[in-house]
Image (cartoon, rainbow over all chains, first blue to last red; front, side, top):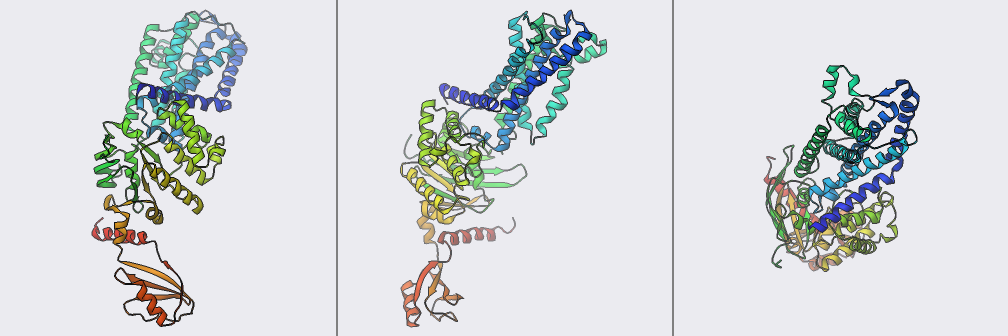
Length: 257
Length: 314
């Protein structure tokens, strides 16, 4: 396949993926908006004033970047895992596998679909947050690059999960038992400085902590961790997962008999 | 590319599945460009495994496969462009619109948007699905879904079309119209390989027939040569008179099915004229005559049974 044909195949797959999640927007775009809006109301407006300041900001300002990141992570992951597994389950992944599309185009297509949904939900949630607080982005470049890298990372993780999944239970295990705890314990609702020293050390093993803090740094200019380290980790995970996902597609794990 | 290059060249193809099942045991055969070939075999013989390997859904253990001279391992992109596959199971997104399914498939092959739209319209019209183009695939009947899969497989205009039981579960009228369509595209130069359980279909459509059984090609020849191997045919005759017993005719054996119907075995060396003369002499008037079974079916059964006999240890 020439470069132009590969580009056409890539765009076709991306359009298909975007069309999928926009067609079922009641399942894909509305629920995260409602959930995060409830977080804003409960943690920001009702409980937030009683908590007071967190790292020098009122609680609503502090919690908004984390909640945006929470929405981006779950939706990027959820989009790819459900779409890819759905294709696999229904057999229409074969449409792609029998075509001359290289594996990396298939990977990039699903990846872009996941990032598109993650960022769409991120924008929706950010706009909703404006009803509750003012947003001043201190470091726009950091904010944008962190959210994109995070979305890529979790889209890749979703793809790997979908390749290994053999039934619908398998695509809910990782989000429920891994993703949600890591995200909730990743500093979305609190500053790591509130934890005892031992738990601070344990928290540093959680990759989501670096993403949330780097994103918060982009918004508020504060972080519990070194930003350069956050970027290094994010980039490292993205490269490692990309190579691994490509390897799985190449070997046909759970896709080719 | 030279015209001498086979459309499909398979050598020593083997496949052992993870559960240890040996699906292909060194399969070799060629298909010439423009040919119309039936790949026949009982369930589990290896037909779908061969098709799966050709379209890269199944990984072979060893052997060589070339599509119009392009090796599927070293030139997979060029090889895949030349193949269109119609699988046995419906494997499109049931929630997508008919038109979108075909256009999207064209996109996967790198066809520009304008050409994709043109081709999708062309094949949906030819297969009688144009009026359904905006319908979701799940609302189509079984026959329409089958035709949709053919339109999807043809949208990139492959030189080799592979159909895995394309007429399974479709009514007779539709089956005939699909036969006409396949004959037409074969006449236009598309090489076709088809698997089917309807042996009448293979006999009517295909110039060549390969029979596979337990992972081995047991026969690969022209349909005419294959049928010439048939030594015995069984005919059913409807008679005007009611018969209590089978008439005594020297050299012919048979039985009475019911009073007005007899079954007669005729060897290849025997003459039907002599049979009718003998019946007339006994004042038996034949109203109609037909083959008891499809001729190819009889051969198929005898060939696959003989491989059973040869490999009792399996």
